[in-house]
Length: 499
Ligand code: HEM
Image (tube, rainbow, N blue to C red):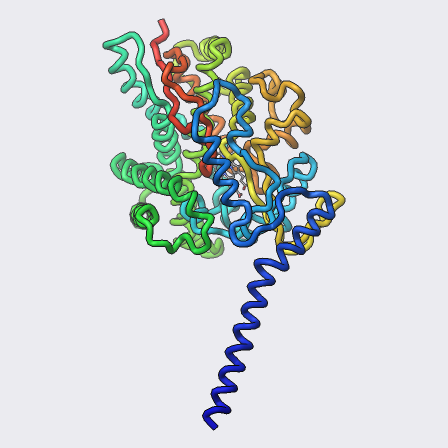
């Protein structure tokens, strides 16, 4: 009898192990190999599929090599920022799509080409609207959209003026004693855009609270950069490393501070305080309207996400604008002439911003050469038609914005040159709409595009009105993709007062 039971238990166990092994083999070998074959049949190249890590170690090696030293002062940066392409990466088949017509199709069909399933790092670094999908995304977008109307964006102006003045006052202290001062613009613009956007999106919070959140976020970003190498290991989120522990703790503390701020404002609203109409206020109004389906958790999540996503992308565009202005003094002079013509020595205002044609062209050209978001990703869950091909389900798609922006087939033979004139007609004509992808496109294009452009232009106008910028002899040119594009060794500029 015992032997019979043991034999049944053994058989059940053996069957269980067998079916689990088949499942694993299917997931990690047969299915990827099948997908690889289908991709090759329709013309995609890349390395053969390799189990578990795929190309991730090679990619990491290429990244480490290109970032091991700075480069010459050139705008030919694509192969440094994305030194790999069209590889089959990790346990998924990943393809790169660079044809503008196909990219447009992908971005305009968000229900077929969805954001890849969330990983823990995406949740920590972005989250909210950025990573949500389907009905949740639609609900959040409806609530958040009004915060980005141009009338709301105009409310940013006092915050931009105050934050710029604070930054420049520090420079002035040094400039009172000497003719010029070396400034690392990277931490400066990071703190600047954080203050500007947080004070706009969440009105009335104390400087101390904003600073606390900022410092914690700097910690999160530092740890995330260190952890990038670890992320190729399955289950990396649970590894007992010091970096992960610090990151998780800082993320948790940010969550607590944001929640405290949200509940404090809610109480004030309940007690009759007026709503300044900022993003937090609009979200809390939606929360109080039971028909909206917007929960308090939604408010906290979006509030957390928007504290970082906007300031960090904008800082990454602004820092490269300051670089090109310093590297191309003739363009700096043209921009300054225009700014002085429009504003004289008066504080820049929103009305005048639309007259800054040269400054706008420069910002767009920088977004082309140095796009803060180097690539965007999509995935498909079933066989999906794209152009005249059918992509096999389970494929991950990368749109390598940086590579597209440096592709002569798309932009012409002068693609590697800094030529703001190419944006003389702006970006809203039909040709530019399909190739200018710094803010992506389709229904999920960047919600903060106007906010970022206004911030960039205002800050540039305020700085160039007063100062002359030059690259410092100690500046090392090293654009690096680290979740977003950063200057690996900072952005050291020499600042002197305009006479
Ligand atoms: C120069 C600055 C910026 C650049 C280059 C940029 C770039 C982008 C790109 C490429 C996407 C699409 C990502 C994808 O499809 O996977 C995106 C989406 C998004 N951006 Fe920006 N962004 C900038 C500034 C901002 C600002 C200022 C905010 C908010 C304050 C913001 C909030 C968002 C959000 C919430 C999304 C997700 C939108 C959705 O999925 O509906 N961004 N951004």
